[in-house]
Image (cartoon, rainbow, N blue to C red; front, side, top):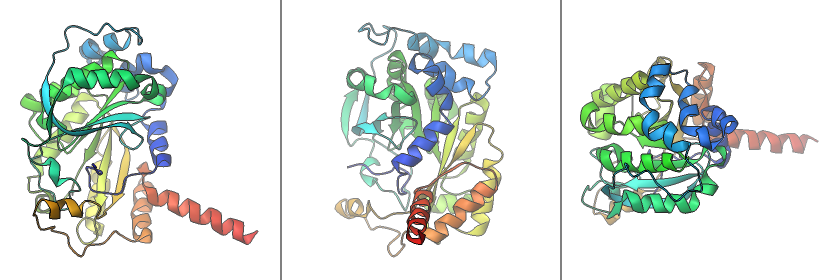
Length: 337
């Protein structure tokens, strides 16, 4: 079983609908045949940038969705994956097919899936085999701008494989979403994948450089450069932030998060993920000591305070705590009557 790669509690289906209605509302209007071009248009990209992305996106999306004729120029690439999931409602707009790639350079203290770290683990998978699986479920994915999400591990560390999977998805009229921490470099990784990426789910561990390194084991500079690349290429993204008591919930850290978000022109919103312990057993199975023993899920009220601060700063927020508050209010209203 694979858990939220960000390490937080996954958003509810209602929150997923909010994401689809926000970042992807244009997709609902245009339909899947124009999904690849319409997604970027939602962020007011310059016309010349759109033309640069014509190959592999618009042209493929305009193919007959029922045709068995796949573009011959999409390469077959063999990668290593941990697993796949056919129907997800929490990893991008609409219903999505998830490819969990194998291998990650980070060693996050709160990682829910340490079994994805080893780049030689998992199993081999061909991008053409993934395409065949996508084809079988494509009619269920297209409504609402659904498609494929490449997660991990870190999908950017297998750039040729991830790019090939994304091109196959576009050939089927499906949208593509990259679930990432921004690992790799521009020329060796990002330039291969981002031209075929419709949106990203970008997990930032902390906005303080030292705390970022303390949590992930890597320097923060790479993540900031990746954020700048999303801005440069006009790629819409949701920022994922895991709320960990004593680590990422301090007032200064949240203020830094707000400041960072307000400087991102293609940011669609923040997905606030309360820390959980659901992956601790995987650490034990691998013979590893879990670094956050004794740390608990933040209380609901604490999570809602962060939600209110982010929304008060004008940011869209996805968080299951909002649903819990709404449900409690509904129950209280019924009791009053």
